[in-house]
Image (cartoon, rainbow, N blue to C red; front, side):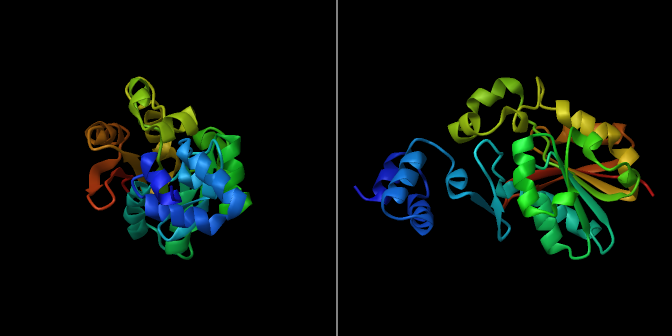
Length: 250
């Protein structure tokens, strides 16, 4: 069987594209090893060492959350707020794909990222200026000098309820860290913390953007409203991405 046929038989929907990318990455015995890893269910992006995101190749590694195209909704909604001199911070950054895309698409913005998982921090520091990738738990990771000065605050906080983790595709469930997926019993554990403290860190008129699901968006918006933000949600059909948007009144 050809590589394409073997990938298709393993359930890879885009077998032709995946075969081409694997062949670009290796040949001979090494290609065969990569194909076997993919057939075994390992995410393609981890095998390649990068994920495509808004025209960029974002470095990833085993055990690190793989960026999803739907997170591009955060970048799209951030751009109107991201002028030169604005400070932007991505919390729960993982490989820092959103931060990297914003830096590429909004020249002059000072972009930072914060992440708790050391493996993801190592990867993110190959994508962004290492001095602006901060390791730690949400706001505790950030330099105190950023408090009250952030114009754009973004977070793809984990929002899958714990009981629903078992229903996720095996690529995520078996190969990505639980810390990047599990949002607690109702899916809002980390979102609550991000949203509650956001007003302390945002500049007047600054915006908080949190990735969420269509089902959970009303509750995310309600959390933002309770925190004193002017909040709404948006869904991008093309990306199949949903974000809650909260602006701190000037």
